[in-house]
Length: 322
Image 1 (cartoon, rainbow, N blue to C red):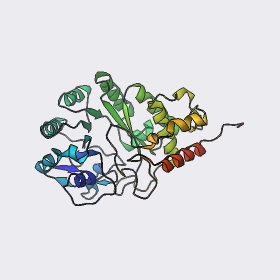
Image 2 (image 1 turned 135 degrees about the horizontal axis):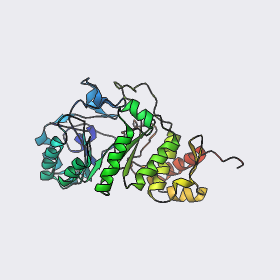
Image 3 (image 1 turned 90 degrees about the horizontal axis):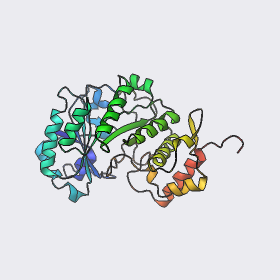
Image 4 (image 1 turned 120 degrees about the vertical axis):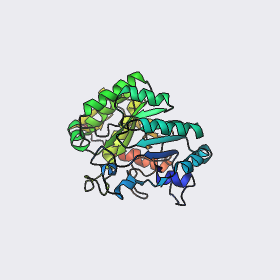
């Protein structure tokens, strides 16, 4: 048995649910009841109802033969990638190696993996088994908050990520979640460090979920997320340098660019779309339909882009004397 996101199941014809938007990546989830007890995640909870969710998404369970048959036709459904996610369990990477064998029998789509790995040898073994990209998820940007929310030490996971990135250049990713106690300076400093190590970044906004230890907290302000989102895009595209960013009490106030230059760079709206592996759009993972969108799962309209860029510019504080 394996779990699929509700949108993936609907797109593959395994459920009759009608979705407002469909994924361009097939999202699979392996395992139950994670050994990690991250305060923001329902998978560290032993409640059966809570375990059915990851992010805002429900994950129904299906038999492998159903999933394999559906994935064999995945490209005709417009899917561009498979994202295999796994809870941390006692069996290590062996179940993941088995899943990869099965996936490679039925599809040639690239496979991204987000799972707990213990060392760079395990990462290399998974790449050898056919995984295209591996995510060592940092999630929590502030080191002290990391200890409180995820447990353990952030520096240990960063060291592993950098070691894997050195051994497997261009194959490593990570997740960063905004709204977990970090400042904008901390977030963009982390982004800059990861990009310089050739690590792909998937940026998320914190989502308070029922049944977790953080269910009563608030998601980050959209304007703050936009500043981090735009900063991440500018750094990734080489359009700005972190040393030129300006902060006021660790809140971003300038990218070090003239206003028109910034407008031109952001004019296609790409900066505000879902980031991470190519072909991944994660519809409504961070937001509800009809509410403010943190990560657009599609190309923005001209009106949406203009409005978003204008709001970003208005949110940047003017420097003293201007």
